[in-house]
Amino acid sequence: QVQLVESGGGLAQAGGSLRLSCAASGRIFNNYVMGWFRQAPGKEREFVAAIRWIGFSTYYADSVKGRFTISRDTAKNTVYLQMNILKPEDTAVYYCATGPYSASVYYQTDYDYWGQGTQVTVSS
Image (tube, helix red, strand yellow):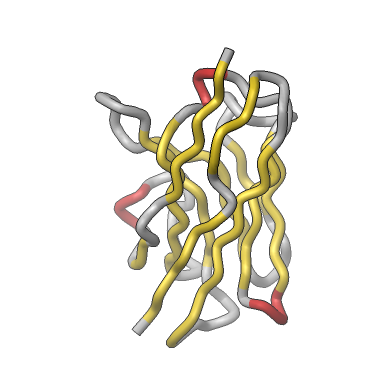
């Protein structure tokens, strides 16, 4: 019923920037939470950022705060992750996810739908 498609991943140099997009389609409600998670090889999936569709409340992991910015375009049902000052440790597969308004945004178990992920690689 809900599909999430990520795009914008690729290769960047340390200190560079990338902008990820997540386009949602299907049965989408405007009171959902949209979030970004990432998973590096051999590591567990971790929270990156999230935004509430109503109210514009945003949340960030300490590791990306000040470098990454999450935003949304309501008309396009799209959420963005602007990644600046990239570091090699940002290398991971980045996943877009959505959950109910009442979700605890930091925990992946509270999200209901997931995209397939987009690879981000940052070279030193």
